[in-house]
Image 1 (cartoon, rainbow, N blue to C red):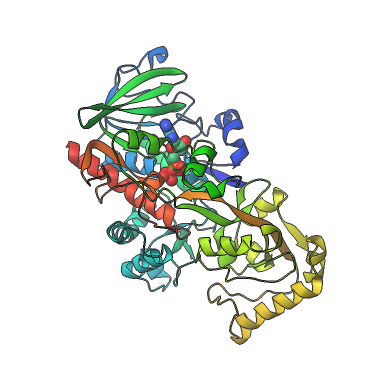
Image 2: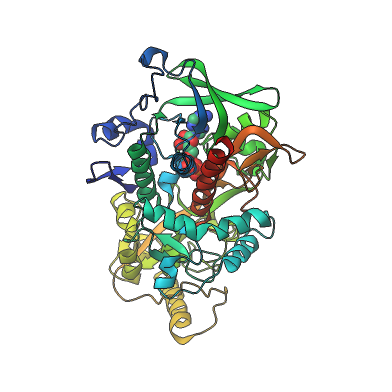
Length: 504
Ligand code: ADP
C-alpha cells in the first residue's frame, strides 16, 4: 500500500491511499476525492466539436496522434508531443484509473550526470550507467538503445523538474556502483509523485483522455497504421490517427500470456495492476511488428505474497538484509534481481525475511505504509524479533553480528556484498516476509531510437510507435531497479517529440 499524492491544477496537495486491490474498486472513492478530476470515467471531452454527444463518443473521431495507455510512457509522450506543437492528440486508457503500473514504481528513476548528482558530489557518467545496465542484463540488451536511454537520462530529470516533479533524493539499487536512483525529496516511492505530476501537466495542457476506453486492434491501410479499433464503455468504434503510440505496459496480470512465454512461472503472484494484460504485444504483432525477448519476464525478489506488495529495493539499499527461516543470510542482497530471486527460491520454503533496524525504517517512508498494512513484524531487539518471526534468536543475532563486522571492521562478506552495508543499531528490529513475484516484461515490441515499431526485417511500420514496458530489448535478460522509470520517461518523451516532428 502506498500513499498517492496529487498535485492538481488547483495546486493543492491531497493525500489518500492507493493499493492494487483498490485500483479497480476504489475508483469511485478516488473520483469523489477529485483525483480523476477532468479524467473522469469517460474522460475529458475530446477537442473541437468531436463527440459533443457523449453517447457517440469516439465514433468517427480522428486525431494526429492517438496514445494508448496513461502510464509514465503514455503521459510523457502526450506532454512532449503537445509541447512540440502537436495538439490534436488523445490518450486512451482501458482502466477507470490512470497511471498503470507506474503508480507502483517504488525504487526511483536511474539517471547519470544529473544536476542533482553534481550538487551532491556524486561522480557518475553516462557511459558507466550504460555499461552497468548492459552488465546487469548480461549483455543481452540493445547497446544503442541503452546508450540512448543513458545519454538522455539527465535531460529527462531536468524535464520532469520543469514539470514540477523533483527527484533529488538519490540512492542505490542492486547492480549499480554509484548512487543514481533518483527519488522524490522525501524518499517516498517515485510513482506516487510521478503520475500525479504528469497528470497535472496533461490537465494543464487540456489534452483529452478517454477512460475505460480499451484499444482492441490497430487499423491499417496497406502497410500503414491509420487508427485504433476501441471498446469505449462497451461500444466498438474506430478512432482515426496519423500515428498510434502504444504505451500499454506489460503483461504481468495475464497469467495465460505469462505462461505462454514462461511456463515455469505458473502460479506466481504478480506485482502488476489488473490492466497489465499484454494487449499492446498482441496488437503490435497483428500489425506486423516483431516482438523480441518475450521470455524475459523479470521476477522481483522482495514481494510480500499475501498482498503482492513490492517491498522497495531502497530498503535493501539502505542496509536491510535477507535471512532464511533458519536466521541465516544466504546471498548478496544487492546483487541483481534474477540472482537474488533464484537464491531465495533455494531456501527452505522458498522465502526470506527482509530484516532491518530503525535507521532503515526511518529512511524509507514506504515502510510505515507496509506496517499499517500489517506486513511488518517488529521486536524491541533481535531476540524479540526472532520470536515474532519464529527464527532461532541465537542464529539471527550471530547473522547480524557478522554483518555488522563487515560494515564496521571492513571484514570480507562471504556473500560478496559491498553496497549499502550499514551496521544495525541496537533497538527496534523489523522483518517483512518476502518471496519472488512476477514484476516486469523486459521483452516486447522491437523499436529503434525513434521509437518506431519495427517488423522482422527491421523496417518501421508506418504510423506505429511504441514506448515504455511494451517495448523490448533495452533491459536484456535482467533489468536494474530504477531503470524502468528511466526507460519510460526517456523514451516516452522521445516518442512524443519524434511524432510531433514527423507530423509537422
Ligand atoms: P509504462 O510503464 O510503460 O508507462 P504502465 O503499466 O505504467 O506502463 O501503463 C500502461 C497503461 O496502459 C496502463 O494504465 C494500462 O491500463 C493501459 N492499457 C493497457 N492496455 C490497454 C489497452 N488495450 N487500451 C487502453 N489502455 C491500455
